[in-house]
Length: 57
Image 1 (cartoon, rainbow, N blue to C red):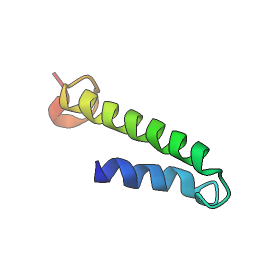
Image 2: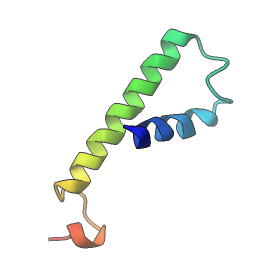
Image 3: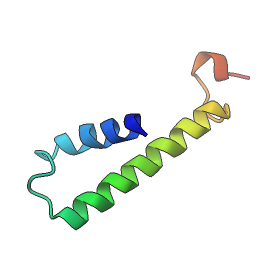
Image 4: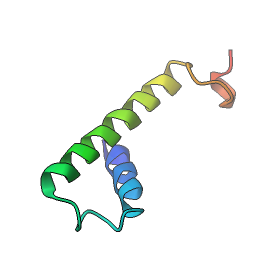
């Protein structure tokens, strides 16, 4: 989960950080990014993403 939190922080830093967003919106954005990141990790582990060396079938 740490990687997902870091990814969310990196994505939102492009907007000037979390400081300007209402807390409710920041929470929604963070959860959405975390969910997408975790799904991407799952896809990579399951070999659903081509072009990544060992995952190529």
